[in-house]
Image 1 (tube, each protein chain N blue to C red):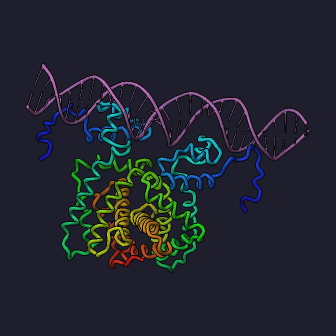
Image 2 (image 1 turned 60 degrees about the vertical axis):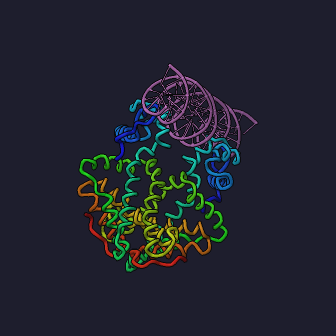
Image 3 (image 1 turned 120 degrees about the horizontal axis):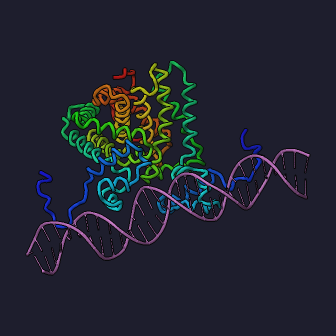
Length: 202
Length: 202
DNA sequence: CGGCTTTTCGACATGCAGTGACGAATTTAC
DNA sequence: GTAAATTCGTCACTGCATGTCGAAAAGCCG
């Protein structure tokens, strides 16, 4: 297990990435992204601004902590997918499995998604994270179809899958009348159907 | 026509967005994005750094001039699409029509795409421009299927279509062994087919 | 020509993001 | 108690981006 015995030598940390993430999340939603300075975030955590940049490389990076773990969940689910399951089916199941959130985590998730959808600068910072997400998909597709992951077809599938999920995320964040997975399922089914028939809104 | 008679009153402009774009494009590719300061770009154009920000709101915005006109071309092509043409067919034709470049413009296009694909900060600045691109698609889809453009299905189609085209752009920029439209056509056909069968690389 | 208006530009000042350098603080190990 | 390890705070600095204000450079008009 982790966290049972840090017991390292040296001066103990004055804060944590998790604490900074929560402080920033609330400050951003309350008073805006641009209106919040790093000095404020650091001060609320009881550290200096220089220390903030020892935890994160940029102001917007503070919101992308949990996203990375989602990528790992998708990767693991895809690795376990049975070989006879069609590619797009396997992807849909993996994405849905990685997006089951506990009810207690939903408000925080919604705050973060609203910021991503609202603040251009935060949305801009997403590009690098999205690349990892897409690569998890395209590497799986590449294995299945026997092509390099960076060739056209796997690449297109990876990008298009994330795009569909992003649309579902945003639509869910804007309305919040149903479970997130319902939106994801509808978006991924429409994608796998080649958008031949329009689907009704969940 | 435009450009025949400027003849406006007041001090004439010291440069143009086009000139700044070309200067920045070459400096970025030669010595890198971070290594190029706005002071250098402005000095090469014979203006002050303050003037640069009167032409563009940010350093990375200097590369997104031509992209906006592409969006308009797609919008116009979609407006002229016959009603009996299937939605995804109409989209594919519109995108291909908007991406026919003259041979003389290809090197510049390639430089720009390589920068977008390489420099994270430039890719990050793309988000806002992509939104307009996607909206051109989703508004067309919304009209066709009788749903609001911002409901789930049109939104997903818009995002996924751009994602497929971005993958084609990047793949073309990385290889450059065929026409850009060949990559776009392959990507959009795969998308419209729901990725049911893998397609070979062009 | 000479004054008026319009438009753009340059110079200056300012705030914030992000980075490097270096010494101080705090803990464990011996 | 001393040494080693790790984190922190302070200082200094570059660059991006913005606001302000007066000067420059053109056309318009009497």
